[in-house]
Amino acid sequence: MKESNITNLLTTDYIYLPYNNMNLLIKDGEYVYKNDLIMYNETNKIYSTVSGKVLGLTNIQNKKYIVIENDYKDKIKKRTNKKNINNYTKEELYNLIKEYNILDNFDIKSKVLVINGIDKFNQDITYNTLIKEYTTIILDCIDALIEIMGIKKCFFAVSNNDSECINILVNNMGTYPKIDLKLYNNDNIIGNKKILINKLTNYKNKNYNIQYLNIIDVINLYNLLKKHIPNTTTYITLAGNLLNYKKVLHINLGTNLYDILKEYNINDLDNMIINGLLSGKKITNPNFIIDNNIKSVYIEKIEEYKEIECINCGLCTNICPVNINPKYMYFNDDKKSKKYKEECINCGMCSYICPSKINLTERGNKFDKK
Image (cartoon, rainbow, N blue to C red; front, top):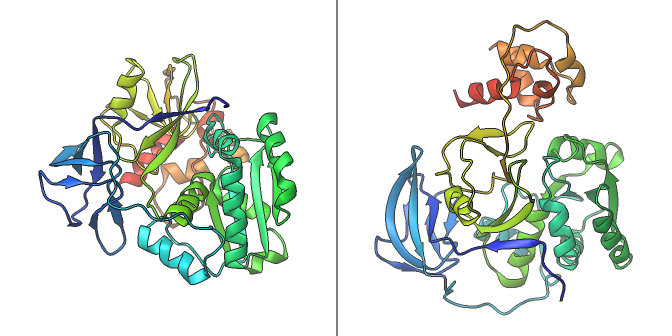
């Protein structure tokens, strides 16, 4: 039996699920089962990621969360019979996705399917690791979606920097002739949704509706079709130059970052960056709740640079992959700047190249919060 490259960290003591003035279906002190629907509103549904006791509301960094004490038993109310994932109609697929709130903006009428197997941040290893670990599950699910939705063209984009991953896929692709494997250099922009879609669909099939999924989406859809269960977990890369390893962690949604750091005896709490080294956000408080938007956590020695006045060299504009003017965008607030902000993919290349050490990415994040 091969050793897994994924570390399960599903036994933290408490889970924190976001409460945004939603309709509650549970009370303080009540016992909840894993996968129970516990709150909802018109656009969102929140399911319990563990079984255990509801402890009530708490505030973490000005956000409200429902706290559930994990009993480590993962009790569920009822188990559904496993089903052949190909035996669904379009309507059944759409209704399941809607019922369990698996994906936003899923277009059941799509005829082009784009699967992103390239991590958005090129230091991350999550997608490559998942592809190697769950090759058959991923390919089976993609193949089922092609059949159910009547997909005309399916692209599966992966990074070519991991020969083991490529070999595994190539050795399995013979039985999936409808999946078009595409290999790309894992630079800092190709994993971006907008960039990848434009690169893959720049010809006649652009007239079709396009459905985009990443590798975690595919795994969640497989579990939905096979077991009728909601998405309660996620995968993140844990790495950095202050650690002597890179890990892919499988964790419950609602896990506190502090509990992850405690598990690995990480004490350098002033050196945390989430979601990539170029475009990521530095956080100073480990009391931070992991949701679907968090892809990686880096414990990184951060070099402090002193910004100097812009020298108008134009390097930020020259390097921008979407051909906007980052300097103008971040130093102005007019229609032109707002248009640039809509087109920006937040790759961080402008900050990386700047000789004046101006953190344009950070400035942009500050403006976005206003």
